[in-house]
Image (tube, rainbow, N blue to C red; front, side):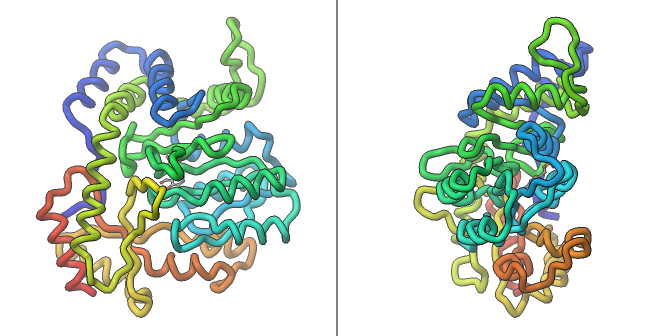
Length: 368
Ligand SMILES: Cc1ncc(COP(=O)(O)O)c(C=O)c1O
C-alpha cells in the first residue's frame, strides 16, 4: 500500500528519544526549553510555548486572551474540527466564515460580512489549510479595524510564507502541530508562538496546572491544565526540526512532480500563487463536480489498487454537532460545500519514491 503519510523518523531521532528514556527525566525540563528556543527561531517568533498538541495550543491561546462566555470567534467553515471545538470549549460561540478557492482559507470578504452581521467577535482564527497560507494581510487589517485579536491556526503550515512573512507570525498568537501527519513530528505535540511576553507567560501557566512560570517558589496563579510536552517528545522535536528545511524542500519537489504527472487529467491541482510558499502538508486535488457524489467509491477503488487517499478536511457547519446546534444547511457556505465535496488528498511523504508517484497518478487517472 502506498501510504498517505508516514513520519520521517530515522536512527538519529530514535537515539535522541532513547537517550532521554535512559536518563530518567521524562517530564518538561531542559529539552522542552531547548525545543521551544529552536521552534521560536525556526518560526521567527520571540516566544514559543510547547504543549501537548495544537488543539491545546489553540485552546490556551483563546483562554490567554480572555475569550469566554458571551464572546464570538470567527473561524473558517473548512478545517479540522479542533479549530471550532476549542471555541466552544472556552464557552464562546464560533462564527463560521466561508473559504476562498485560491487558498482554501478564510475569505476576507466573507469575514467582512461576518463582522457586519455579528457583534462581539473578540478573535479571528484563520487556518492555513493544507500548508498554504490564508490571505493574512487582508484578514489582519479587517480584524484590527474591528478590534479583534488574531490567532493563526498554523497546525499544517510550519515553514509556510506569504509576502516573505512566516505562518504564525502575522497574528498575536500562532499555533502549530507536531502530529505524525505533519512535516515534522513529536508523536503528539504543539507550540504556541507569540511576540507578547505576558501572553506567553499566561499560556505557560495554563499548560502547567496554573503554576507561575517566573516564581522561584510554587505559586498557583490560575486554574490550569496539564498540557505539557514530555522530554522525550522534545528530544524528538529537536532532531526533527534539524531536518525541517530538507523535508520541506523534499515535499515541495514531490508536489511539483504530482502537478506534472497530473497535467491534462480532469482534476484541479493545488496552486502556489506568487508570493506564497506552500509547504504541502497535504497535496489536495479537486475532482470534477460530477464525480463528487462518488468520491467514497473512488477512494475505495484507489485503495484496491494499493493507493491510500482521503478527503481534504471537514465541512465544520455540517458536522453533526454544529449542524444540529445551529441548523446549518447546504448552501449556507457555498464555496466550502463545493471544495469539501470534491477534495481528494494524495499520498505525500519523504518515503515516497518516484515510481510511487507514477503509480498514484496512473491509478487516479484510471479511476477517474
Ligand atoms: C487545521 C488544524 N487545526 C488543528 C489541528 C489539531 O492539531 P493536533 O492534532 O496537534 O491537536 C489540526 C490537526 O490536524 C489541523 O489540521
